[in-house]
Image (spheres, rainbow, N blue to C red):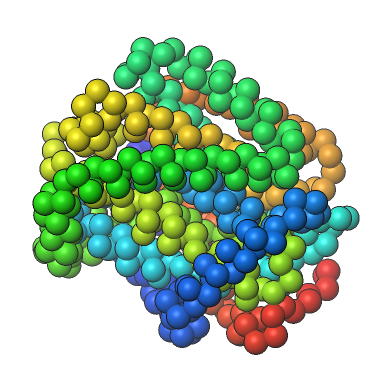
Length: 440
C-alpha cells in the first residue's frame, strides 16, 4: 500500500513540468555562461593534468583531483550499468542520444552549483566546508537548507548505500551462489575501515577504485569494440536513427521513457542534485571558477564516457526485451566474451559499489554536520552507515527505490532554483576568481 502511494506521488513529482524544468535549467545555464561546458572543456582537463603534476598529499584540504575522483566514485554506481540498460529497454537505442544531451546540459548545471558552493564555503578549524545548504542559509533560506541537508543524509543511507548493497548481494547470489550476508559482511568491513579514516582516507580509496574500475571496464569494452567494428557501426547508426523516432524522440520526450531516463540520469551523474558541490567546497582551490570547470568534467566522464561504453556493448549484442536490465548487460558481455563476460560485469559492479559506499559517506556526514559539528552524531552516523550493507545485501528494496526519487527531487529542485536565482554571483566568481562570504 505504501509503495503504491509513493509511486503515485513520484509520478506527480517527476511529471512533465519537473522534467521540463531540469532540461530548461540546463539549457538556461548553458546560455547564461556561454556554453562553458563546451567552450572551456579543454581548459578544464588541462587544469586537472596540472593538478596531478603538482599535487601535494600533505595539504590540509582536498586537492581538486582528489575531489573529482571522490565525486566520480559517488556517482559511478550500478546505475552506470543497470540504469543504462534500463534506458535502452524503455526508450530504445535512441535513448542513448538523449542521455548524451542530458549530460551536456548537466555539465553547465554542475559548473554553476560547484562554483556557487566554493563562493559560499566556510572555514571550520583547519578545513573547508560548504555545499548548497550553506548557500541557501547565506541567502536566508534556512528551512530550505535544512530540508536539503536532511534529504542528503537519507539519500546517503538509501540510494548510495542500501540500494547498491542490495543489488550487488542479489547479483552475487544469483550468479555464484554467494550468500547475501557474506557479501554484506565484506561491504560492512570495507566501509568501516574506509569511513572511520575520515575524508583523507575516503579520497585515497576513491583515488584507487575509480581509476581501477575505469581502466578495467573501459579496457574490456574497447577490446570488444575494436574486434567487432561492423557491430560498432551498426550500434552508432541505431543510436542516431532511433534518437528522433516516435519511440525515443518526441513520443518519449512526453512519455514514460524520458521521465524514467531523467530520473535515472540524476542517479547516474547527479548533475544539479547538489552533492558534488559539497566536495568542491572542501578543496583548497582558491578560484571558484577553476573549481567549477574541474567539477563539470564529472558528468562528461561519468555519462558521456563510461555509460556510453555500457550502451555500446548492449546495442552491439542486440536488444533482448525479454530480460531485465541487469541480465541484459551480463548477456551482452557474455556474448562477446564467453566464459568471463558475466564475471567482468559483476566485478565492475562490485568495484562501483565500493566506490559509491566510500564517497557518499562524506556527503552524508557533511549534511549531518550542517546541523551539528559535534563528534558524537558523526560517530553514530558512521556506525549506522557502515552496518547498513549487512542488512540490505540481497534484500528486496523496491519501496526504497521509489523513495529515492522523491529524496532526489527534494535536493535537486531547490538547489537548481537557488543556482538560477543567484547566478549573478557565479558571473562575479568567473571574473574575479573567488568571493568571500562571511559567516552569517
